[in-house]
Length: 169
Length: 169
DNA sequence: TCTACAATGTACAGCGACTGTAGAAGCAAG
DNA sequence: CTTGCTTCTACAGTCGCTGTACATTGTAGA
Image (cartoon, rainbow over all chains, first blue to last red; front, side):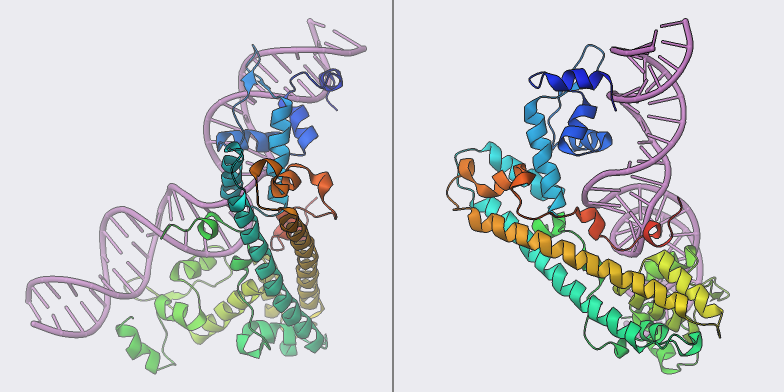
């Protein structure tokens, strides 16, 4: 545990160090610096000795980012939502749209993974566990045509990417 | 389409070029070279002009690798299965174990993604689409405690990694 | 034979979203 | 003052490819 931070943590109005922010919002110190570098966390003030000091605003922002990441939103999607928030007062239809796209992606992944589950289950059930030479698992893996159902590739089960949300061509 | 390959494709006994192998087994040329580099595809013979020539054995091996990848197996897991295959005659319990672990991973991912789906659905249903200031989506994203159920982080929905299958510490 | 163009070769950079490391400096407690 | 933590910058590594640059080789058509 950090020692000097206990002191600062008590007076919640005071600015906090990057380590305290990390613990408070549930991120690693390097991740926070990375978010600053890519511009989704604002550049904080610095102490006389060049250390970052954060306010409660930063805690809110970082919690928003981390939670969205946990729900699978990509950094570009999060960046877009942050920009929309800053235009306060407007309608949130675009935010809904981004969240809706994320939901579609999640559902597609579930479908894909269920196909994989079936395939793996079937493969394992067929193997009698006796000999490599007659192993159904290896056989099925060697020959896609033995698959009962179509399964996609895992490249497409990754989290929604910039290309998905913001196609360029 | 490659022109000279049509010729070679007819006599299926003959060795084939990397491009023909790529089309036959469903991989990109660079991917094959990458697999050779990391040692899961054997180094093929070369022509007098230094070009790789592949046999039917290579087609089988590459199909095995691609199919396993499509089912979400990691490269280390595939490497392990290939090594086990070379010890032909032995029992295939270890192959089953690797496939079983993969199944566990897939099932865990499905569980996680269903939680995300619920969360996103609930979030979207709560938003009346009127104003950013009162947007439930942004609110929920800003405050994890508003979530009904626990959801993990998407980092853990990635494909089974070397660390998962072969932990080192 | 000449000319195009496709395919292949090597080597290396880039993707996404971080994570880890090295080495220096600062800060507080004992 | 020393010890031990934290922070700083800068950069390399993760995973499984994919794309690029540039040189060379092979082949088909004129």
